[in-house]
Image (cartoon, rainbow, N blue to C red; front, side, top):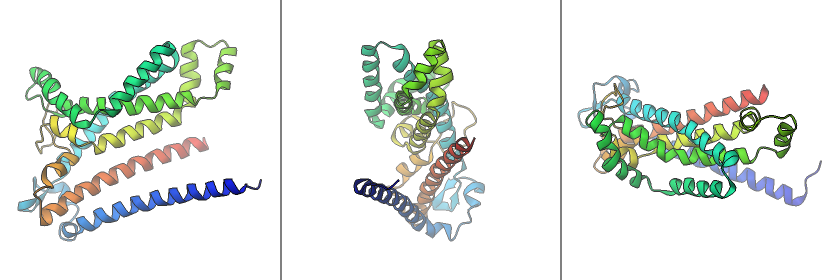
Length: 284
């Protein structure tokens, strides 16, 4: 079937936008690599894992504790936010009255618009002292996970809600004709049909959690150590960059760009894994 002139123009525009996005990502990677090169050409990559500690001024470049803190906080937040976000979307889409559903979505959107520094300030003043009563010092990996959960919950909830809204009405009518209960419709029809949108929402939320800086910086304690429990103070890679970039020079500055490069690679691995999952399901 031949395309009209308007369709061809739209196709060219979309291809150009896709190419521009790919070029921007490539340029960011090249910039990070260029800024990291002064230390990468002198320090083997293995030393970023095996050095005794993180003291770039003394030639020690251990990134493992901060990498672990980033991964643990992201994983914990995603594990908490995913079921809560899906439950919120299901409630607003299938259980709540129309007026309440609309109000509920507006509140979720309001949560998405709150600046991260406000979340961090609330966590530092309110949440950290509460956790400190259970196990000092309060500013810890657990506090960071809970703050990240609040921050990424709207992303999951709104994306899943949009995915459920896009389920074809024919599926719903077919389920009703078969006499399925409301929960049967949700679990057997709506959620499987919206699976790709749900996964996309989780990936977006995980990407935000990986790159979040201010909220985690204020509540996690900023101690460079390998976390052995949820109550240990930690420092993430993003917080490390924010804290030290203002005064870093020379190889110290380049080592911070290595941290940024590691964050970028983590996001690319996350997106690549999601693409593989989508491709496998597309062929199943």
